[in-house]
Amino acid sequence: MEMVTLTIDGQEVRVPAGTTVLEAAQKAGIDIPTLCFLKGINKLGACRVCLVEIEKTRGLQASCVYPVAEGMKVKTTSPLIREARKAVVELILSNHPMECLTCVRSTNCELQALAKKLGIKDIRFKGENTFFPVDDSSPSIERNPDKCILCRRCVAVCNQVQDVGILGTTERGFESIVAPAFHRPLNEVNCTFCGQCINVCPVGALKEKDHIQKTWDAIQDPDKFVVVQTAPAVRAALGEEFGLPIGTSVTKKMAAALRRLGFDKVFDTDFTADLTILEEGNELLERVKNGGKLPLITSCSPGWIKFCEHEYPEFLENLSTAKSPQQMFGALVKTYYAEKVGVDPAKMFSVSVMPCTAKKYEIQRPEHKDSGFQDVDAVLTTRELANMIKEAGIDFLSLPEEEFDLPMGISTGAGLIFGATGGVMEAALRTVYEVVTGKTLEKVDFTAVRGLEGVKEASVDLPPLGTVKVAVAHGLGNARKVMDKIRAGEADYHFVEIMACPGGCAGGGGQPLVDAATRMKLPAEYQALRAKAIYEEDAGMPLRKSHENPAVKALYEEYLVKPLGEKSHHLLHTKYTPRVKYAALAGEECKK
Image (cartoon, rainbow, N blue to C red; front, side, top):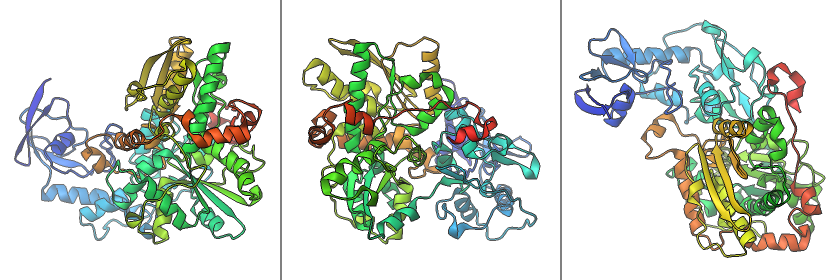
């Protein structure tokens, strides 16, 4: 590898050729402020905040896009640089709503932090501001263009990472705006509501649709019996909102916090993740044995489902008909559990805590009313749950460790690892292996499907079925690669796991936000750190295979009878809807 030596602020730095000045400075421990830059996603030099002086070069240069050269001499701080950076940020602030105290990103805003860091106490540039309507058409995401700073991070993640491509910069000059084509609202384009745009937005221009108040209203209603379920990935990220390092699991403190918020019962989505494996695993076996549609493709990611409905409608029959664990839980809590405890399901209010913004969309799909009611009434993101805990004045770090309630709080390690990319596949293989072979699986870790490689492939010998070929993809850009390969007849997979978000649920659009500076300094990708916490908790659990869950066994014995049975089919399975590909031109069609 060719190496380059340069000097930054008098410090000699040696880096590979092709490295940018910003990356070289980071390696040397020299901090250069950024705004539009996002590691691995967005390198535009658009905001001009990362300006530096380079000897023998005219003017100031954007360090995030300027490549290093042998013998280069760089200054990252000087009166000229400081003044230029302040002027750039002041210009951005001159056309930005001053709503910091009421903004969802207050105290967690990269623009706010940068203004403070640069010592900005006044804005010298006064003038007219642009005003655009808020787009709250989506059930999952709210877009406020007035707060947009045109950093284009959301455009980059939507186009380059997710390969959905519904966002772009339109108009010119002072009227420039990031929006879908023709200024269509999000609900009228083929947005998957994955929320990755929220995860990369440095300000409050994008946020999830708020379900906090409707949850408080239900909790405070004496006629409501309010139950809550928590997704696997939430426990590996919630602690970040209270100052704990990324990758700290807070499962039992989370259960204690939910109880103190006033929920009548605190359950775990891992319970129905185990149930999903029983239903989906048997569905796979049935298709393999009886010549059904293959590959079987997982269905627990609502962002992926909507993407498939828009982009690959010819493969809807390949999707598992199993509902997501969230929706299975919602259907069962208003039927099985309501009967078990003698509560009128009409008085039940079902809340889920999810790492995912698309889950807010999923609960209002018309297919999800098999209990006779809306299966899930409200979805809180990990961020929203943290806000409720703070609002209630709960000292999260001082809470005791408590268990989930029974019976829908019992789970296995297999249900837990749904929170990481490859987790559904691994959980399924743990169960399918024992069901098919009749042998005990001694080594339950299928490491071939773990990790952040975009697409992972593996083969598993399952006599008497033979060799089963599997694939795992996370992020919709990688999903497209897998689906295009299947469409072209270049793959002969039996089972495919697809998660809409990079890193799977650990990197969901509703998880705690990780700013650009933190991303650059982490020892690994933040999704990998959260996944590590999930796998470590799985390794310490007494039960690690879904079919060993005693509460799931009891559920079948008492209520469902058997996997893929009549009652299971009615409550736990669903259908899908082909949607037009270019929904921006279809108006009402996309709102279905």
